Image 1 (tube, helix red, strand yellow):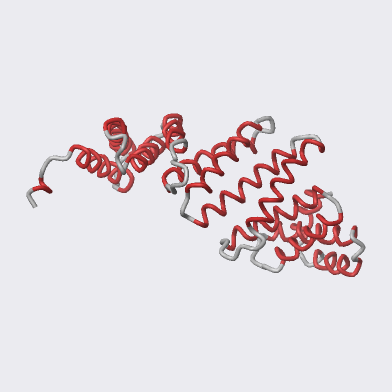
Image 2 (cartoon, rainbow, N blue to C red; image 1 turned 180 degrees about the horizontal axis):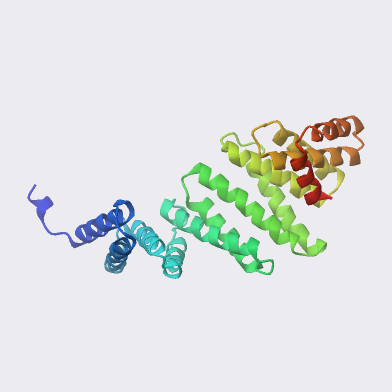
Length: 276
């Protein structure tokens, strides 16, 4: 028992920083006091990482420091810490703090990339961070989410290129969907629907009878879930009708056009505005 009372600078520094971290994130404090507490925690965590680089709590400390800085509106500093953490994963060893850091960075880059048509570098950076998430996370739903978003980033990247250059991005995205989702049984339901819709859209854009047939199957699977977003269900219904027409499946096309008439006018108008 006496040994447990001996000073341990590594343990004590981390414990104090963690207590301040928890206080700053959970206690009812005014904004100024909260930020001061979090910034003090961030300082202690920085000291901890510098003084104990081999500590088993190093990556946890880095992630906590980044969170403190983000909550205190020090976004640039927070992202710099996250980049150190995301780059520090050890090959072959899972680490959820590395994965969480990479996911945050990917989200920032993905958002920047889709909101700026000229920012292809951010989309490509997001793809790399999503790869890190999948390599290091032990959280299956998070890995599926990252995989789906990687495919979306590749699709958007391809849409910004001429057809001859777009093909490689589209092919990689399609391979991700078909390999990771079409046979998996533990994918969260909200990701299943998102994948079905996005995969069908991608295959429709790629064209060719084989791709269109698979796209039609994906739209049909999507439409089986009546809890999906109504606007997306409207779009899926019209696209399914168009694809069936192109494939010469006239009876199926007629059925889908009839289904489209059952949607409220607002949804049908939205569909025509998007697709026509």
